[in-house]
Image (cartoon, rainbow over the protein chains, first blue to last red):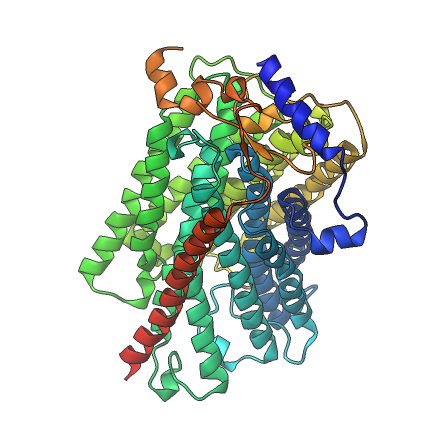
Length: 531
Length: 66
């Protein structure tokens, strides 16, 4: 290893000595470098997490006690809507695109992404969209307040904040599609010689599948909001019942996008978790091929279950049965993945550094979210639980635990590679335990609230729901404040600390670990040969 | 580690970093015109799919309403 690594690194480091890349502000504005763009995506995502998180904390503050304390009901609705839109489109999706930009070229032995300029444009579309979304709170009529699902007729009736949200979604969608085209082209065309598809690290596989999902469903959302826009301003009646349109049609179209979207934000996390568990178990991933097929199966099945979000709109019993069974069937490939991760750990030489803690936390929490999803898949249960806090608890277990915990695992796993310094392990572990405890404190009790019948998207509630709401609010503040530890750890890691070796994790495998930490500005200019 | 496992997870089992060589590598600084064309072709196909889905869903909804 050493000879080859030294030779490869020596060559790369030698090239980096040329130092011919822009510096200062223009480096970030004009960059076409995948690492720079990945870094910008990650920081943008973190910023949006803080913005969306502040909205969540305002919501939880209002719900600390029954009655109206802090915000007016109409503003409360705007907060829930913007929180959802910002977290899904402004935070989680860019977060994983950031990971993709940083890691995919390094992992497949490509010098950069296929389309550097388009990559730059994909990123720089995000800030205007974020500004549109957040500043829509200050326009007459306020921000969109129909929930992140943007159901008509509310969306047809609301003020210009809705137009800003629609425009922002268009921009975010275009950015996502361009990013996906870049990722697919990079993976299909720029792999190093010998790096066959079935030799790729699982993170690349999961992103390849996610990128196809994005290309298939983001245009569906774009179509839905475009039709909403024409209903609002150009006299059409796609969804307006007053003009002969069908509001439920929007729900069908939205959820045809919306359910695959859930997997779009989770599947890249599956890839990260697979690599982290393999590395800290010091064992090859159990069932690599079955993992690939399971992810592909989940992606395909995600197109077939959309109406389980709409049981209460009324549909034939055969349709209810179909969507119920199809939804439950997704548990099969998901179970394959959980089984494979557990089997990878079985008799492994385990160590519990921060990435591994987050990976195990992810498995536990995602399984809880999966099980509550199975419960909600049952039509007879769902008609009772629809629009209650049980649903809120379920999707936060899948989205926060699924996306965020896997992203935390990935950040700690690759932070030494990105920055060239080791992070503070003790602080990382404190971050994990606080996040894990406060996350459960926030969302587990919401299952009970939902079972007791507390509806979601309300700023006030009957007295009997107070205790669980107070626990949830305290947990939310604890979870939010815990993330400052992550920020501190990252910043100190960037500024200095113990020098990270090229491969800081004994059990880690893959091309990225063959590069020095941090990797030079230009990498893999001479492609490696994988045998 | 058995050979069966290694073949199922070749990128892990065979420890690719041992097999990375620079001397026999391919120059990758400037994509060849052929490579650029291939990238462009892939991108255009994907763009066409996205546009078809976008237009298709609007057209379908229009048809359902009339």
